[in-house]
Length: 152
Image (tube, rainbow, N blue to C red; front, top):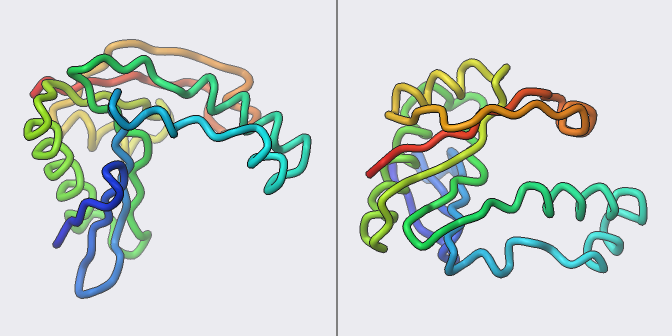
């Protein structure tokens, strides 16, 4: 498994010259561009979609201090899951965090996403906070979310 850093925020894992997964790391230094402009959402999603997307990126923007790397997205190709892709990406995320002087990783995971929740626990993350949201359930399919952290 090979993991490459791309654009300072996105990493892609490759397996046999094929993209196997992607992870997004948000830090205080690179979070300026995290929120998209309303006009770009409107252009691509139409007015109703733009309102929804802008609202959720506003809610989702984590409060990041100088010592934190926030893991925003982790995804592995379906046929390559349980083959070390996410482990390789998280290990590389830890390496990147340490090399940039960060001392913790944080992320949100859907409480009902048992495979992901169990995986993060196995990787050393622990629960900081729990939140429940009817809006999140309506638009993302999950009502209950767990905020997790791993000290480095």
